[in-house]
View 1 (cartoon, rainbow, N blue to C red):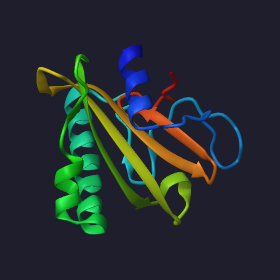
View 2: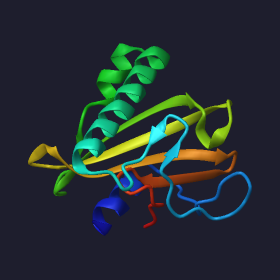
View 3: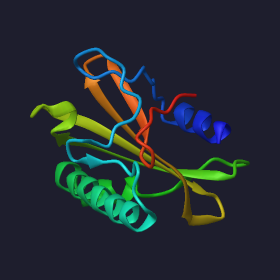
Length: 147
C-alpha cells in the first residue's frame, strides 16, 4: 500500500499537508465535509451507496464544469508499466467544503488493481481547506493520507 500511495502522490504531484481545518487544530478523522460523506464507520452496503452518491456528484460536476469529453478523459485508467496498480483522477469545484460557501477544488484519485479495474485499492479525496494547504484523506476511513 505504501508503494501505491507513493506512486499516486508522485504521479499526480500532490503535496499533502497536515490535516487542519480553518480554525487551525488537527482533525484526524472526519465523517463528512460538505458534499463529501466519507465511508467512516459504515457497513459495506451503506459505504457502497455513499461512494456511489459522492462519485455521481463529482462526475456531474466535472461534466458540467469541464464538459463531457473531459469527463471521459478523466475516467480513463492510467497504468504505469511495471506497476501492479492503475489510477483514475477526477477534479471539480464543489461548494460547502470546510463549512464555507466558497467554491473549492476537490481531487479524487481512485487506485485500482492493474488486472481488475473493479478492485479498488484506495479512494483518496484531496481538498484545499486553506489557500496554501492541501489535505488528502482515505475516503473509506476519513483519515489523512500521508506517505
